[in-house]
Image (tube, rainbow, N blue to C red):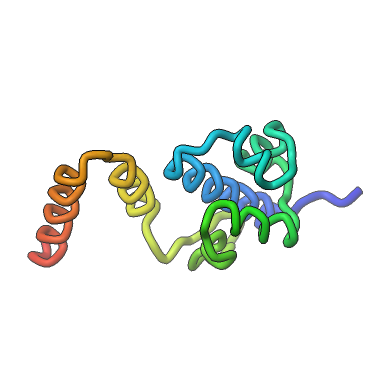
Length: 123
C-alpha cells in the first residue's frame, strides 16, 4: 500500500475544504450531496476532511452537483514543501462564503458596496 505524500495530503484537504464550503453555501447537507453523487454521507465527510482522496471521475460528479467547474477545486495553488500557497488569500474565500450566507438582498448589497469602496480607495 502506498503512502500519500505531504503535498497530496494538503491538496486533498484543500479540495475537501472547497467541497464543504460550496456545500454550505448551497445550504446542502452531507446526506443530500451523498444522494446526488451516489456515495455515503460518511464518505462525503471523509472527502471534506481530506482523509480520503477523491478520484477524477468522482470529482466530475461533485463538480456537477455543486455547480463548480472542476478547475475551481484546485484554484490557483502550488504545492510547496507540504503546504499550499494560494494566489488568492484564504480570507477572501471566507469573506465570500459569509457574504453568500446573508439572505437579505439589501444587506448583501450594502456589504458588497462597503468592500468595493474600500478596495477602490486603497484602504
